[in-house]
Length: 139
Image (cartoon, rainbow, N blue to C red; front, side, top):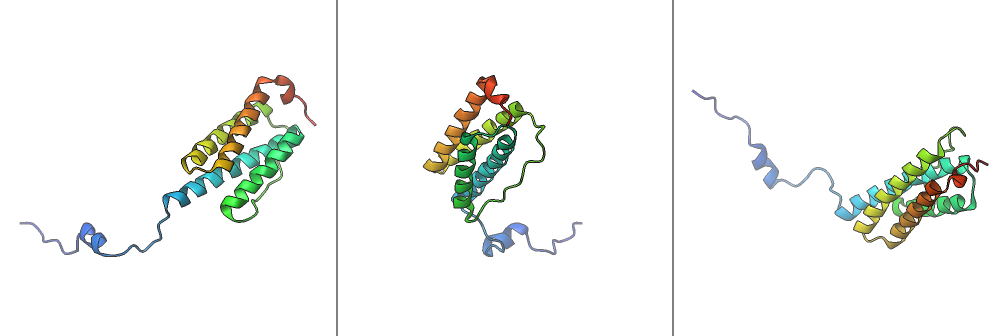
């Protein structure tokens, strides 16, 4: 009535054989996530630097680049901002959100330096959004 099963069960073959692909540890995954969030924050910071140049943004970009290179083991790729017609409010909101994500990951992996930097960037972007004069000082 029924055709017999001619192949081995997936469950039985997986239980006895070693993995064919490498696995990352939780710490490695968190490092990758944190480096990605900080690299995205660096890109937005570079866009803001093109729109509203300031010493604070320059220092933040250097510190972010340092953290990304520490986590990834190399110099981060930096792209030149595309145009000077971006919206500073939207960029500050985006940077604030990225810094928040980086802070969550940095806290979960107990990375104090990245957590402090992320919190400082959140505060800076909150202050920039609260003070409209900072948003209109295009360079």
